[in-house]
Structures are given as structure tokens and as C-alpha cells.
Length: 258
Image (cartoon, rainbow, N blue to C red; front, side, top):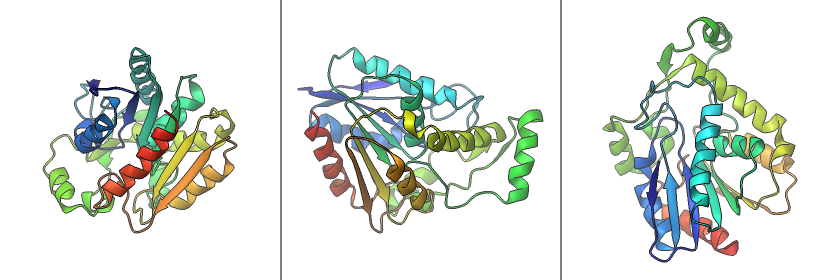
């Protein structure tokens, strides 16, 4: 876990990265939040980035939930309003954490949350994975999460292709836990607390199925929820050429609740 403090703090932003990536890919966004008076807390999820356990593998999705809870508890030490931002699988991790834990959050931002995929393994592979999950849960296979699928930003693509921390293989157990977590996000939708929510979805998402995100959003019964789709943007909206505009939209949501 790392902390970046603002000079004149008004709140704390806890950020949760997506599958395959790590906190180092969020340098620009971290500085943007600091510039408007938010401390930032972020870590690498288990099995990713600089974590010491086997990369691309987890025993349970609960490991992600526990990590997010730990980061929020660290944010509480500042005694300031706390916001949660989760991207892709990090968005799914935020959803599942809020469904299972009682946390003092002032607002939530989900960026292209992983609530359904545009492509799934063939049916026979899905069936095979259920058996392998019992006997060889640590077996790794290619994630197929290529840099050109997530952003149109050429600089970020080149960075990812040369990033030794970028996870390219995931385990059978990781896949089964990920699928189960997506199911629970829908099944336990009524357990999501009544917290102001902003969902920002890439309009040309080649990773997450945006119709599933919209379906989940429409089923929510919250006092305040906003759905914003960004036409033509790829999956990583905070890395796209239009990222400044995306940030300004997220900033307005945060400032509204400070």
C-alpha cells in the first residue's frame, strides 16, 4: 500500500486497479486527485504488481475484498471524507467489498466495471476449468488482455508492452473466482449500500460488455446514481486521449459530495 498526500487535503481517494495491472499505471490520475486536495491511497491487489505471492493467482476473491477493506481503514486515519474508485476488475472488487463490508464511504466511482465480458473462453474450456479448479487450481493460461484492446493511447500501449509487472497469465482458480464474483455482484445487488454512485463506462469497450454494466446499474435502488457512457473510448477511460475530460467529470462528482 502507498500513500500520496495533498498539500491542502479535503478528502481521501482510495483507488483499486484492474486485472493484469498495478498501481504504477495510475501516476497521472494520482497527481490529478492530489491537485484538487485529495490524499490518495492505493496498493497492488494480491497476485499482481509488486505483491509477493504468485502472480496471476489467488485462492479466493475474498483476498481482493480484504485488500480494499484494509486500504479504506488506512484512509480512515485521516478523518476526512473517503471516496472509492475502482477500474474494471477493481470496480468489481469495490462492488463486492461494499456488498460484504460496512465502510464509511462518501461516494463511489466505477470505471468500466467488470460485470460481464465481451469474450469468454469456449464452452468446453469453461467446463474443463471447473474440473481443473479442483485438481490444478494454480495452472496458468494466457489472459488475452492485450494492450491494444484496453486503450487507444499509443504511449500507454508501448509502456504496457515493456512493463515487466503487467500480468499476462492467470490461474484457473483466478478465473473461477472472477466468474463467481461477477455472479455475486448481480445476485447480491440489494446488499450494495445507499452511497452516491457514478458509473463511467467506455462506449467502445473491447473487454467489458457494457450492456451488462448498464443492466446492473438499472437494477440498483439507490438514492443517487449516475451513468455516463463515453462514446468511442476504449476500456481504460482514464488512459484515453480524452482523459482530461473524463477526469473533470469524475472531479465534479467528488466535489459535489465534499
